[in-house]
Length: 341
Image (cartoon, rainbow, N blue to C red; front, side, top):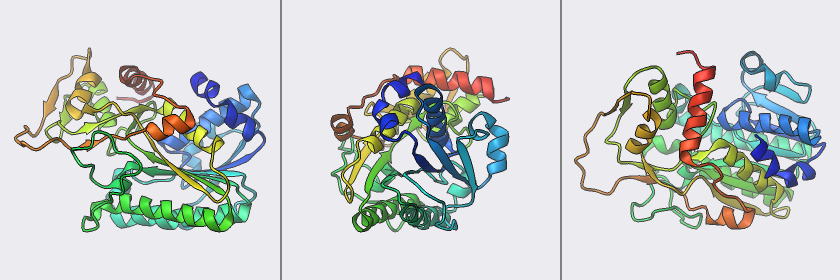
C-alpha cells in the first residue's frame, strides 16, 4: 500500500475532499481501490468520501468491516442495471462493476452483456445528474477478441473484435459497447473519460472459485490438492500485481484528457508466461503436483492474451513495479492467512 500512495500523489492532490462513486467496490479490483482511498485519507489527509454501489451491503460490512464500516464510506444498495440516476453529487466515478468473477453469473452471457451495457448507461446517467467531471471505465482486453498468435503484445490500435457468433463473447462485446457509451457521453456532457483495458491481475483477495487460473491454482495448492490444468497448459498469459494496477488506474484519472475527450490504455504485464509455468510457480516449494488434463497434441501456436502497454508507460509514467514471483508469494501468503481450507 505504501508503494501505491507514494506513486499517486497527483491523484490525492487533485481529488482532496471529493466524493467518488465506485461501482463494483466490493469486488477484487474495487475493494483494492476502496482500501487505497481509505489509507490515503488516514495518511495523506485526502478526505475523499466514497459512495460504493453494491448488491449486498450487509455482506460487505460483515466480511470486510475494516473497509466498509467507515465514516468515509456510504454503501448504496442496488444493481448497476436497475439503479436510479439519483446518487447525489459526484466529482468522479470509477465504474468497476462486472460479473465475470462469479462463475454462475459469468455463465449467463446475456446477463453479462446487460450488466456491461445497461449498467454502464445507468451509471453514466447518474454521473451526469451528479455533475461528475471524470469517469474511469474498467474495460477489458476482451474487446479485441482473439489475439492473433503472430502478435506478441496487443496494442490499442489493433481494431480487432470478438466473434459475434459466439455467445461467450458477450463480455467482450458488452465492454466494447460500454466504451462507446462512455465516449458518446463524454462528447455530449463535456467530461473526461479514461478507459482501462484490463488484462490478467493477481494479488490478495483474488477470487479462488471464478474463471481465474491463478486463483484456482492457489486454492488447490493451499488445500493440499494437485493443481489441475484443464487444457494443455500452453496458453500464454501475463499477470500484473494488483497494487501496480491501482497505481495505473489512479494515474489514469489524475492525468485524464481534457473534458469531452477519451483516452484508452491497456493495463497489464507484457511478460508472457504459459499456464503450465504459472502452475509450477504457484506450487514451488509446496510439494503439490501439477496435472495437465489434456496433453498438447496441437502443432498450432499457443493462444495468447498479452497486452502492449507502451502507451500507458509513456503517457502515465507507470511501470511493472512488482515481479511475478513476489506477486504470487504475496497472494499465497494473504490467502493462507485469510481463507480456511
